[in-house]
Length: 147
Picture 1 (cartoon, rainbow, N blue to C red):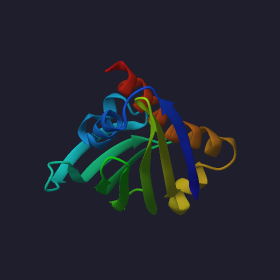
Picture 2: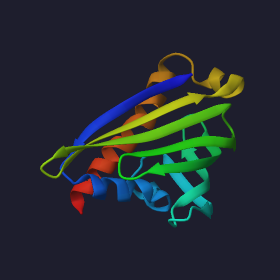
Picture 3: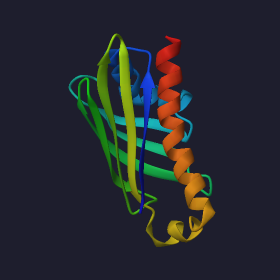
């Protein structure tokens, strides 16, 4: 299992952070490991609900079908329904710190499965984990603070 989380403090209000994080189609431009997103269906609020993604996992491009759920403005969850890894669950937790500041935590729990897991042994695992977690949190911070 590859698990971990990364938190950043952002000089932007929680609503802006949520709007950016919930724009799944726009995420490849600021989320480092996410290469491509195709929205297959949207929820009743017009947000991406079922998506096909391609992510750079350093050793391989990983394709997944993810189902998203939203608890505006504090949480976004996604779970893999089908894909190249055995299982994947991720989420954003957003906390209003007051004064227009937000703490954003990006977390992933990934079971790469036997074949991909063999590619991720040793020092490569740490590099992949840092890449997957750091790109999203730092990307959201840059995107939210630039608006």
